[in-house]
Length: 290
Image 1 (cartoon, rainbow, N blue to C red):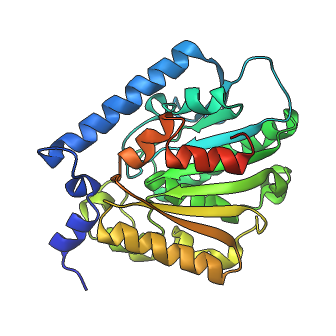
Image 2 (cartoon, rainbow, N blue to C red):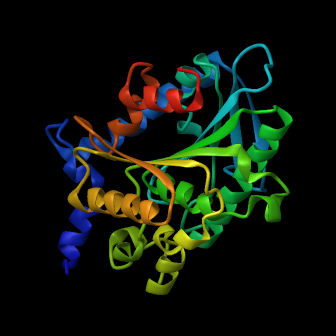
């Protein structure tokens, strides 16, 4: 069993990057890249917001291809930041690429700890996705495809077990694919670390809110799940990804594991703004718009 120092090293993604002289540059650079890409998307694309709650972050920013076409796939992005950082405003960085390829892009915002706890964050994302499912019906979408990064991958994985028909009267059939990029699927190792300071989860709460604890509850049995991890993610992040992929397979899900070469925890998702990037191509192919 790892001691606290080792746990905090393993769950500090910036300390594993190899792109900078000092690892302290990783997060500021990541925020800058995402901010600049998001600003370009808002300047250049038709967009609107769906308000699903009362706070400023409880919105879904939606970016559309021109022409108001029906039948398009919807690419949903859920940002990371350890449930306590990042925001909706810097999370549409890939929108130009995906809209340009013929998808609607829906970017999910949610409140952060310590303002809210983990259960509240999950419920907010569920409501946000419920609004996207309604949009999918209204636009006669060919399917909803969720992509979550880091903490967002945890939240996306939790959406696999939502009773969409029971809670939102929307068909779970709209959900066709889920992409889980460098995620955490068992939250219990975080309880003793700095990550949990604003969340204040107990061991029991961490397990309650872990996707690994909800494998038998999965409702969208026909959707494909792609579990992805960066070459330069920490060993613990890589272990979590592999174990969740295996668990999904054992639960009877159609899954794919992708070990992305040459990238770290941050540029593994930053590069989604590049049309020829391996993961961009993988997502577009799955959505049928490559």
